[in-house]
Length: 204
Image 1 (cartoon, rainbow, N blue to C red):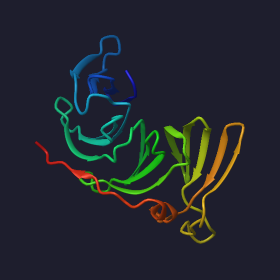
Image 2: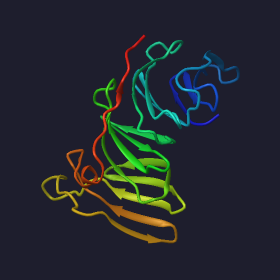
Image 3: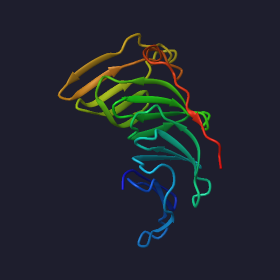
Image 4: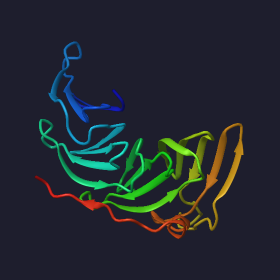
């Protein structure tokens, strides 16, 4: 078993060989499996937003599943740039992905059938986990430890003043990384790496 999220009476569990497994946990003493396997084989993490599951799938990228029918989830979209996706956090129309050797990837999921990359930050380490609070992304990175990435710079009037360069300060395995976003559009990251388009997947 890997990542897990519980919503209501359902537990969504990532597994190493059976994809995303869904269990009814209304009776905690006797959970029952209602969907033994869905999505790609290896699921490292899952984030549930409404009737949609955002799944970090190791070697298949970020996979988006329609779970309105939990007995039979269906894939509706995918973003795969060839990296190894370990963790995902969704806030609004943006997915923040720890993509191992590709670092932190920021993905526009406003159209869940056609996710696109907004930007990326990578300093050479391996991103293994991500949590976003306000305008800061906290990234568990090997071998550097914790990286704190400022996603945009807040000002007195707005939060659209971009930091022109990334600034990194490290001590005892802790890194503070300052970056700039412009209304959720990446300024510096776009210059470092072009946006990619995801693969549109037709529902079956």
